[in-house]
Structure formats: C-alpha cells, structure tokens
Image (cartoon, rainbow, N blue to C red; front, side, top):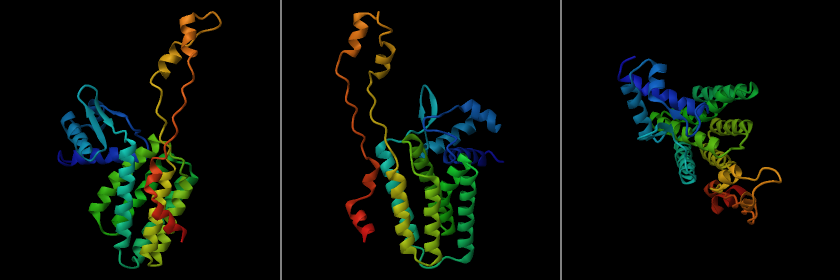
Length: 265
C-alpha cells in the first residue's frame, strides 16, 4: 500500500465502521491509536482524518482531538432531504428496465441483508442496509453518486444511532425488495416513489431527545439523603416540577402535505 493510498483506505475503513454502527456519534479517534492500529505514521492518520472532516464525517477540537460528528436536528433534516433528491432522481433517470446482471446483483444484496437479519448480526445488518443505496448507484453506473451516497448514508446511520431510530430492519429490507421488484418490471417511476416512501419511513421513526434540564445532574447530586437531610438540601425539591418539553417531530417535516396526498391517491 502506497503512502498516497493509505489515507484513503483508512478513511474508508472509518466510514465502513460508521455504517456498521461500530463507531458512535461523538466517538474519539485518537491519532496515535489509529497510527498503531494501521501501522502508519500520525501524519498519514491526520491526512485521513482531514479528508473525513472535509466530507463531514469527523470534526476536530484543538485541545481534545478528533471525534465522529454528532449531527444536529437541522443537519439530520438536510441529510435525509439530500438523500431523497439524489436517490429518487437517480431512479427516475434510469430510463428503462435494468439488465439481468444488475437485478441479480441487487437481489443478492437483499439476500445478504435477510441473512444478516436472521443471524441477528447487528453490525453486518446495519452495514448492508446502508450499503444497498450505494450498490444501487453503482449498478446505475454512477460512481460519483455512489461516493456521495456512501457519505450521506453514513451520516444518516449516525443520525439513527443518535436519535434512537425505531425503524425495523426487516421492514427496511422489505422496502428494498419492493424497490428492486419495481425496477425489474421496468417501472422506474414507481421505484422512485417507493424510495421516497422508504426514506420518509426511516426519517419518521427518529425521535430527537427532549432538551435536558441543565440542572438535572446538579439536582441529582445534591438531592436529600434520608429524613435528616438539611433544609437547604430539601429546598431543592420544593420548587414546582419542571414540565418536560414536548417532543418535536423534527424529521417528519420531510413528509410534506403534498407528498402525503400524493401517496393517498
């Protein structure tokens, strides 16, 4: 492996780990640890991490080092919206029935997804469910979109981890199968519609955590111990309980009133 290739390969390995949910949002990426793991210099590791930072996968803190990004609600909406535009546009542009070779490859991918789901292999399952979208772009012959989708899919995997996705893996796999079936029939418009619904479904199963009370940790630490607690400590609990903020349906904004009506037709 040449010094030129090494940073890219390290970056790709990190993105694959994100897709497999082996690296969580906010995970620290130590330069020395990565250098030891890959048997390279810290200079090469820094170049790999800099490439990932440019792709929006990691961020650097001048004092604390490198970390996997923690997408904000606004960033999550943008990532899912971008995937909708790119993936539905890609399917609409196919212009006819794909070759048997392409259909066979997509069906094999779905079979691998199903096997990982049955085996309860969480890492392989997560990776394959995300990689289906990259595979679709590769089958369409668009390597540039495949690279873009890999990054976007990795970001939405981080989002699903951070915002506690409840979208069922088996349901995702079934939706993938329905998309491929539409493509096999030569109905790229139906495939695009199914893709939009699929991405909507994933987005709508995300639950952004309610804003935490900044005093919660201090209140817990200074809570009274037993009946003999000092008056000052008991006073911490005499105030009216703070009403938890309503959970915001931040991600369902991707599903516009118009798109709902279109699906109901």
